[in-house]
Image 1 (cartoon, protein in one colour):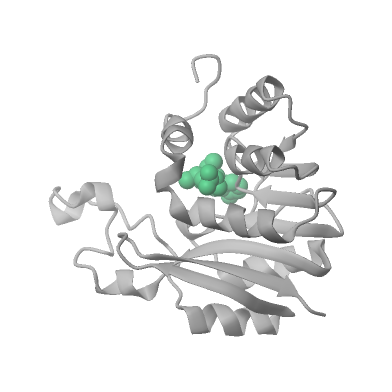
Image 2: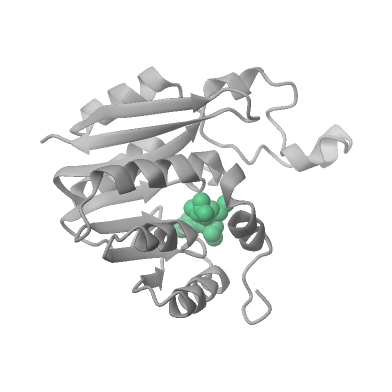
Length: 213
Ligand SMILES: C[S@@+](CC[C@H](N)C(=O)[O-])C[C@H]1O[C@@H](n2cnc3c(N)ncnc32)[C@H](O)[C@@H]1O
């Protein structure tokens, strides 16, 4: 962290990894279904901590992109120290300039639903074409239960401020399981696994899709 300009969130995310169940579960499901020679791409990968975890589980071909060069530099240095082969590059995951092809899996956790104007449908439009038939998408999503949390329209760090000083919520997309399932179907993806962490706030669900056509 001291050697790079990575935001402090990434040190929290690595040190408190076991509490980030949405990220751990998506990674674990991929590790369970993927053979070692598989290729995995993670847009919005931050420091690549999820990819490095998959690397330690034996997955060979790991790719990630992020908009933040400091986080990527941290990931590159961690990969060197862990002696793990990891290809990282700077890109806007909403409109990627570089998209790997014929992937065995895509991992997408804890970034898309923070981006103003992003949509899961557009994400699927962009990313499902990078998957091979039979490939997997592991992702998480904030559920619509958050819509019923008082103050959910505001940034969760601003709730003690006067209303006029509060920023909009950092959770810009909220979807329930049925919406995720039908969006998947529209993009040739079958939902093969899901779980919901009911006690967290916001409540998040994790999904594993498989490309069927
Ligand atoms: C909360 S972090 C999560 C990182 C990683 N997915 C994880 O779960 O450990 C969100 C990441 O999304 C990245 N990000 C934000 N907007 C982005 C964009 N338009 N394209 C790519 N990455 C973006 C940030 O730089 C940050 O690294």
